Length: 318
Ligand code: ATP
Image (cartoon, rainbow, N blue to C red):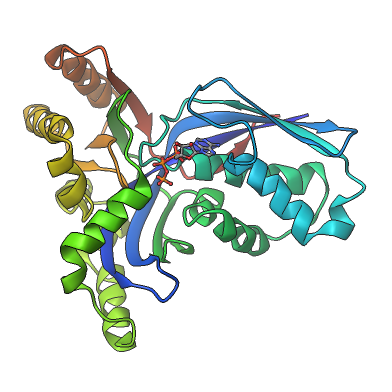
């Protein structure tokens, strides 16, 4: 039996560049792992079945679960290496909010790929695991890598950046509110499609990507300039999600005002939301801000977490 921590991610930068021939969007993102983690336990079974258990009612326990799909993908792609191994029971203890823009499902799939490589002695390299992971979801390769990275393409091309920025995030999400990632991107296309760079203008795409690689956020991360990281936070999908969910827009204003009061670094929505985060330089400041946020929003539906940046996507516990 093996147990892993599967960490969530936040986006420090999310820019939509254009459409791809495969129907996805061409993106440039800066992703960061945070130590808000699901606990994934893998137990070998003698029979060739895949069983999922999860303590969260919104998470499917059948073949719709990304963890299930990770096992099935390994069995399909590596039949000779997996067919003598029996099945597996996967227990998911959910701490990462669901449908939150924090890549909870993707991190679970990453943990299963990583874990079965060990449990079944498959001998896959990091690159091979990431290639398989990209078939399950665009965020899976980053979740396998962890730390801080630039992700391009549809998010699956991961270039690791420096791993040692030791900031803290205060994360806030209304428990009963989830945002569908396909809805957010589709609505963005409807409203902003006219601004997209055509895919055939490859050099423009490359220039735009290069601009992020040498841009202010990446420089701030490299130079460990916390204030500059805070002032360069950016997410195109806020233009869609905040107007559609005024409650989240109001929460962002509250968190921005608190950040100014506490001299914290900046506030942004992660991924397709609706989770918002404020960055802080110390754990004490993050805790105080989380407490003040709970006091100023008197809604029992609001969930508030604090989590430090971490250099790891998946961590082995036992
Ligand atoms: P992303 O940031 O990658 O867009 P998200 O954080 O917005 O993802 P998830 O928490 O991954 O969203 O869940 C989205 C949907 O995926 C859920 O509503 C759920 O039905 C489905 N799902 C499938 N497998 C899982 C899993 N292991 N954990 C959570 N959700 C899962």
